Length: 160
Ligand SMILES: [Zn+2]
Image 1 (tube, rainbow, N blue to C red):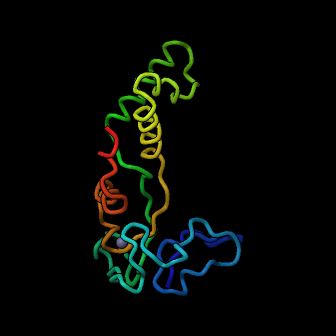
Image 2: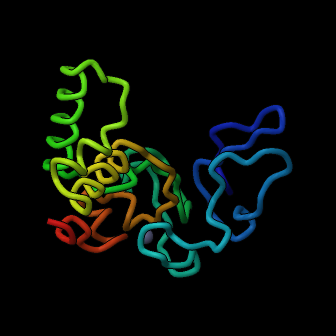
């Protein structure tokens, strides 16, 4: 049976699902609903193929006994130290010249070239943004870097 975070005034937000029935949208407004295809949003396996979570400590501290997918929050991209440094430099420069509210994209492109500048721009922002991720017990325990690697492959080394 699904567990809920919110179920009030026509607003529903689930925390975990335990069956195909739990995948169905509830009446009202569904916040970050479970994946309608019933697949883990990291490894892509269907709920019919995953092992359920056990009681508290199996494998997570919270008690998700019987859950097939749980809702987690993950960064939308991998951490990249170079992107963060470039972004910080851009912000410092823009602040120094009195343009602290200006979007840093133009500065990044001017200083790192179009491809690398755009990569730094989007990479840093994606890492700073988090989104829901419905995950099976094998994926829910992954550290951020492991999660990104499993879901997207090695994206960090595609642009250097
Ligand atoms: Zn998974």
